[in-house]
Length: 160
Image (cartoon, rainbow, N blue to C red; front, side, top):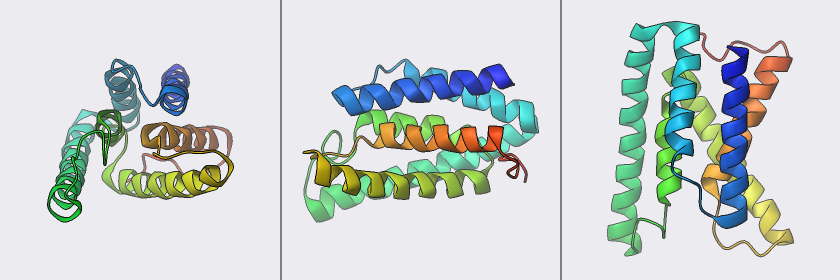
């Protein structure tokens, strides 16, 4: 289990580095991350709960992406993919959704979006950033969350 968590941190670090440096992430990182997070989830909960929670989380992410698509196309009148949201961000959302029970996922997902917003606003004043490296910032949040849960006496992320 510890090895899987270390691998998850390494993959998230790779995603963060590539997204912030080049605004592009090698696509293989997302399925690897999905597999590792699913295995960690399985080791903590069992297959039945993993399948149930993953299905709910995937539906939530799909609904969020669908709403973003509709808003972008009909209200903003912009192109959706690579203008409003990148493919890497979408793949990250889906990989992230496989790793946690639904309540934990929703809290971490919203927390990572808020973290990304605040980090972008902070860095925008220092650097000339025009777009948000969302998958990279969310990866940093996930690294921090996993590190805190590993090293400190925090509640288990997989409690129901």
